Structures are given as C-alpha cells and as structure tokens.
Length: 189
Length: 189
DNA sequence: GTCTATATCGAGATAGAC
DNA sequence: GTCTATCTCGATATAGAC
Image (cartoon, rainbow over all chains, first blue to last red; front, side):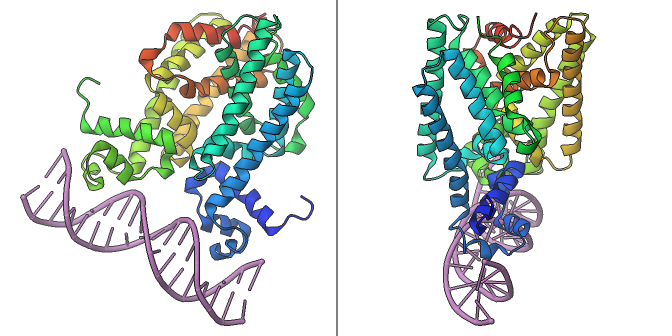
C-alpha cells in the first residue's frame, strides 16, 4: 500500500491489535488511540467493529481459496502440490502475519459471514485431504493415516504467523524449502 | 472428579466456554447460565473471572513443567525423549482439551500471573530445544535447522486440543505412535 | 475528517435477604 | 449456596458542530 487510505490504515492497525489481544478484548478506543484519533472518528471510515473483522478475514480466506484452485488445476504430482500448499501458506503468512493470527483465533466472532467463512475453510480442507489421499494411492506418500498427516501439516502451517516476524526479514523460498524438508521429507517415500 | 465441588464445576464449565469464544467474550452471566444459577452466585465460590483463568492455566503450565522434568532426568536417548514429549502433550491434551485451548489462546489475558506463565513456557521451550540440539549433535537426528524442527513439532502438539475430541474416544498410545511416526519418523536418521 | 457530547447497553462485582 | 437489587464502569455507536 503506497498511499493507504484511512480505511486501509484502520484495517492494518486493527489486525495488529486483534493479534495481540484478540478481537473481543480490543476496544474501538484502543484502536482509535493507536490511530491518533478519537473513537467516534473511526465511524467515518467503517460501519462497525464487526465490519473490520470481516474485511480482515474474508480477504485472506478468499486468497487461500484462490491459491488452492491454482494448485489443483496444475498437473503436478501430489507431492509437488503439497509443496505448493506449503509455499502458499508461507507466502500469505509472510504478507500478512497479523491477519493470519486473526484468521486462526477470531473467526468464531464473525457474525453474518461466519457461515461463509466456514464453507470456504471446509472446501480448502477437503481439497487438501484429497491431495494427500491421492498421494498415498499413487504411491508418492507413505501409507500413513491421512488425517494424521493432514493434521500435522495444517497445524504447522497455521502457526506460521507466530514464527514469521516481518516479510522483509525472511527468505520465503528458503523457509519454504526447510519446512518442506521437515514436513514432506518425513512423508515422501 | 468423582464428587466435584461447585468450584471445580465452575472451572470446568468456564474452560468449555473459554474454548468456544475466548476468555474476553465469555461473560460471568454466560457462565452462570450454563451452571444454572445467577451470576452473583458465582462469587460465593470464586473471587473473580481472572481467578478462574489463573486456576485453569497455571495448573496445566505446571503439569507441563513437571512432565518435562521427568523426561529430562531419564537416561533415554534424545529421540526417545522427544517421543516422551509427544506422549506428554497427547496425555495432557486428552485429559483436558478445553484447558489446552485456553492455554494456547488466552494466556495473554492473565494479569498478575502472566509473567510467571511466560517464565514456565520459556523454560519448557528451552528444554525442548536442548533435546533437539543434543539429538543433532549425537547424530540421532538429521542435521536440520533445530528451530524449524522445534517449530513444526510444537505447532502440531499445541493444536492437539482441536483434534482430540474426548478422552474416552481415543487410544492415547495409538495416537502417540502415529504422531511419532509422522513427526519423528521424518527427523530420525 | 475529526471533534465533543451523549445514548444505550451490558460488563464485573458487591450487599444483604433468605 | 443462591437470590434480587444495585453500583460503577466502559463498551459500541450516533448526532451534529467545526
């Protein structure tokens, strides 16, 4: 964001605060203070606290959905697809670690858009599980419990936001390959 | 708990609610309703909402500390120690999945005991990292980045509460061995 | 675009009767 | 051990001046 609008600034600062204390514990006064304005002034740019949460979460959820679509239409092997999934998570987590934290911890505070979010998440997980299962069928991956494999993989990827400090400080490809070594190296036959 | 006291019931129900919505979003009125009493009646058993959080978190944190001590004084190999760490997490997560969720998501809402909690957590992580590093030095573990190994391991173990439904429904040893296969199998030379 | 002032609501917690 | 009644505070949000 070269010239972020006031609204974009609010989303960004809100993400930082939501990550630190969680959506429910952050007040509009906290957010306003961090912006250097009064709480009432926020409402000139956004309609509600809930809207801020929606703007943060739905955008990321859709980026995951779209990233997964690209992976699925490629004609790579299933193991290559899993590597692309790792890269997708590292990329999104490094671009927006605060938003990823909110996605992990505060999705249940969505009101109207909660169902939509859960729908996107379920599709994503179904797609990932299909990749793992096909990988096992095609003999690319050891014959392990696919649920355990998926759980271990997703847990690590979902925690990336804790680990990734700032986009500038990390080498995305290097981190991805190290993660692949640990996560896939143990799975790959 | 064969004959749980009223206080123990409160802690248990509170853990369930904190897991669902997070500490900040759960009100004393929510908690009271779930108990079938009025909010004011809660204060006959506990001093504050904050005290409930402390009772949940500090107990688990101390169980991790004590579990790690037992692992450290054993004369097992470092890989065996890592397997014991997995078992420790599976055990505690299956005994108290709600509490584990609160530990992961609401520790930052501790007030007076926050420093104490962070101290216990740091010690635990330092000890785990030492096991991994020694494992690499002693040629038990592939020469990988110990931070990445620890991150991947801890991420999966910290998310166990999402995955483990109820103690009765799972075979602790079976789950542990499957996790060890995925998590350690990829690391072990 | 930000401010002051304010409306409305619900939070944590206490007092005292039963 | 639980209740009703209540205190006090701080939350989200709006109205309207500048």
